Image (cartoon, rainbow, N blue to C red; front, side, top):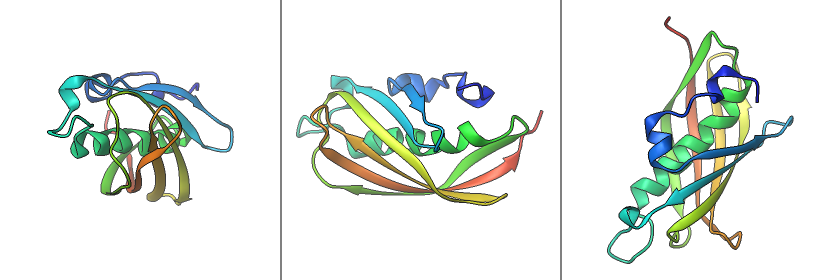
Length: 133
């Protein structure tokens, strides 16, 4: 990961306990998150908005890994599907690019429990913009 976009840990990513494990040459990103007890809902599992935030971060990662330093991206749409409750503690995510052109990308991601069970999936539409310096 030599791309400068991935070298900095934004405050929100730090809050989510995000760690980029690797980004493969084919553009698939592998990440880890950590959901502390403060992320729990009334059922004792990860609150949906926080799981969505994890996938927002994850689905951006494979695109940022491919962008030149003079470009940035922002999420314009994130659709999540909650398949089963997401447990607290360590979580894994996988994200990949589905389509990409000069202005827009569509990415997909999965948030998984430690046993590999997919808890939440997301599709993101991302806008690619010039970096303001």
